[in-house]
Length: 133
Image (cartoon, rainbow, N blue to C red; front, top):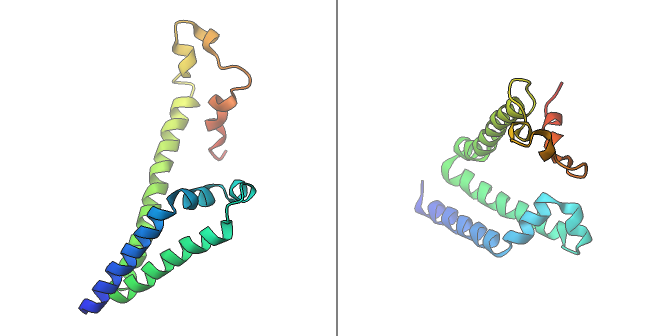
């Protein structure tokens, strides 16, 4: 690998880090909830474009420097690992919250059902809907 490509990769990576550091709050807001960001007056298209351009520049420079296979692997493996981790968390959460063998936390308290969440706090039964039937 020529030194010029390594320097170009370092410069592209540093530029992407600077962009993410400068616009971290806006990028997370636009990525997480674009509708609310639009209502709040944040330029959704502008920040999505900035995020996609930063990603595209780093991927294109890295592909020339190290090859397509490692770049593809470093792009896909973290997302796949996160998906596998959340699947394991869902299974644990499902077995803990929804199985008959382990009671919910409020049933194990000394007060019993008196610690049952109020009607407006419906979050306690939401995990049972995360799983396909």
